[in-house]
Image (cartoon, rainbow, N blue to C red; front, side, top):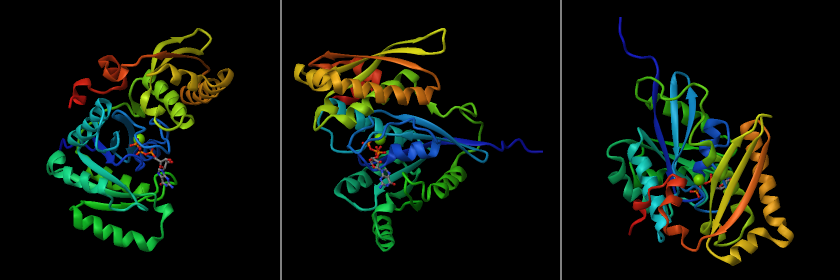
Length: 306
Ligand SMILES: Nc1nc2c(ncn2[C@@H]2O[C@H](COP(=O)(O)OP(=O)(O)OP(=O)(O)O)[C@@H](O)[C@H]2O)c(=O)[nH]1
Ligand SMILES: [Mg+2]
């Protein structure tokens, strides 16, 4: 007789430059959209956990904000959260974009790996392989492995799902033996009110131009489940300037209406019931320096100190 458990479970941090496809990969692994995705950089702001099961292994994926050179308090807190995710994980997966290769940003991350991962295995995932010729991948694999001793290299398309199963199986084999950390049917570990706020922020980011998405934040202020099975959600969009409010409202309120409709549809799909969504915009010139805003996002305010 042996009391070695048959199950295993562990944390896998997804790290990489902004836009590498970390959130797309998390959603692909979990099989549901728990982390928002846009074509713009710096979409994810905090660590988001998604749970997947492969055989006897429970894989807890930690999506992190992209790693870049931070300027603002918010940026610094995001980068700190990302490296913190790598430090707490059992295995780290570094994502790079196949068509961009070993960029300056990727080099900077590789320089930080040794310090932040302390002997933990780091796998390389070359993502977006659907965008390049196969020949290029071999050369890139060689170049990357000369830059860092990756435990394994995977070529994937997080969006299309190519190569994702191989990565999953390898990760399952790397998980420490032990009991599962979450119930079998749990796919995300972040409060629903935060997921709902993120959904609205995604729609705002997709529709607004230039710097505006980086100058706003969304919070779910009130969530009321109603007897008829629907829910009323009140959310606040914090912006920095009066002018921003006008842009988000749009002509005759058309922009905010479109954003609200799209966000509500996604919430209803995720929650499986009707949602009444009420959005309010508040001008708060200094929200980037308010600690409450950070805790609402799941970030540490102090991490943003220069
Ligand atoms: N062609 C292609 N596009 C992809 C793939 N994976 C992700 N993308 C796209 O890349 C963009 C960025 O994806 P995200 O998942 O938001 O990237 P991220 O690394 O989480 O970005 P941040 O949160 O900003 O750090 C989106 O437009 C995705 O649709 C892929 O395998 N192929
Ligand atoms: Mg992301």
